Length: 157
Image 1 (tube, rainbow, N blue to C red):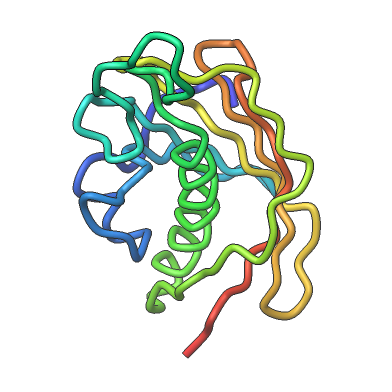
Image 2 (spheres, rainbow, N blue to C red):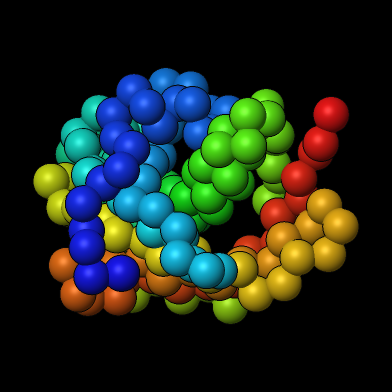
């Protein structure tokens, strides 16, 4: 998607996803093209998945000032949820809950620092009944920082 103009952002994202602060990991939605959707997140110091404490020298503590691996995975899951939420709200239906069934082929190349903007492309690989298999690519500017495949189960009411 060449046009990186958000069509939904800020508080409007809460209409697309079931998560609520402080667990919201998507702050912009750029739209859908065929089987691709696009979302974003600006990494902030108050993000619960961001490590901001002092790191002890020689310890195995997470890198400070960076969004941690769990935050990237949650961002991918919520990016997929925003896609579903967008489709459902356009049809006037209630946004369903989704659950991560599995994460495969996860590769994290870099942890984004506070202030960086994530741009995530979700590609629907397959949909069977209430199960969606997606492929995700997370970039900062044009650099790929993470990718995976995720199986998501949708709980319809």
